[in-house]
Amino acid sequence: MKPIPRPAEPGEFLPENYFRRLSLSELFTREAPLEVDLGSGDGSFALAMARQFPDRNFLAVERLLGRVRKTCKRATEARLPNLRVLRLEARYTVEWLLPHASVSRLHLLFPDPWPKVRHHRRRLINAEFLGALSKVLVPAGDFLFKTDHEDYFEWATDKLSLSKYFQSIAWDDQCGELSQYPQTDFEAQWLAEGRSVHKLRARNVST
Ligand SMILES: C[S@@+](CC[C@H](N)C(=O)[O-])C[C@H]1O[C@@H](n2cnc3c(N)ncnc32)[C@H](O)[C@@H]1O
Image (tube, rainbow, N blue to C red; front, side, top):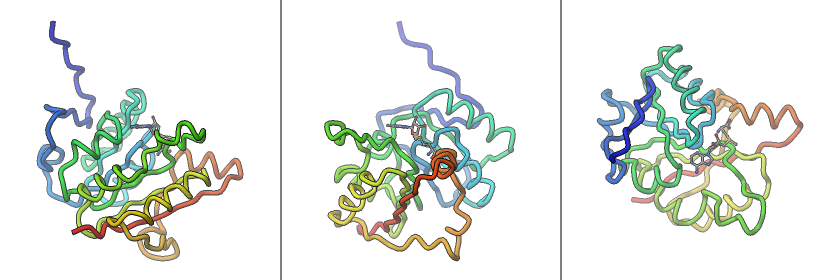
């Protein structure tokens, strides 16, 4: 018997077909720069960004249904048609689903650091991921990464410096739009606990 598909939450994006790359027009009817929040949790960051930049489209990607539902509910209540939520695995989304040259900025904020050495291979950032990411980002698109985990930060810095597709650039939060970069839920929690936050920004230089 064929499984009955789960109905989409309001504001949720349920792909018709998970085995082919999407086109931008399936995601949003309106053409606008697209930003992706990968591992969006309860969605506070994506909601704040969608509110701050109504002229951009935002896709929040999260694998836990409860968090997806919460984000959809908050986006609907806040009347934010420029935010959609996709319940899917992060690596799969970047490697197989997002259209090539479609994303102007991808935010990866406080992903699981997989601290044990035997689990390092589960870390999202690696050479394959960066290769796939360079294809979905537009030329000169940005990858923005934050973590409270020093070892994961060094790991990410290392992988980016080895990648021919990215060039590290300054995360300038004194002026410009990064000065209003919203805090995420986990960031607020870590900062309240006195932990430091490490951040990096890299530009897609692939052609
Ligand atoms: C530590 S939380 C950070 C959430 C949010 N970015 C923040 O900073 O508040 C990591 C989030 O990523 C989600 N996540 C972890 N691995 C994932 C994966 N492989 N694909 C999609 N989401 C994932 C988790 O369910 C969780 O909501």
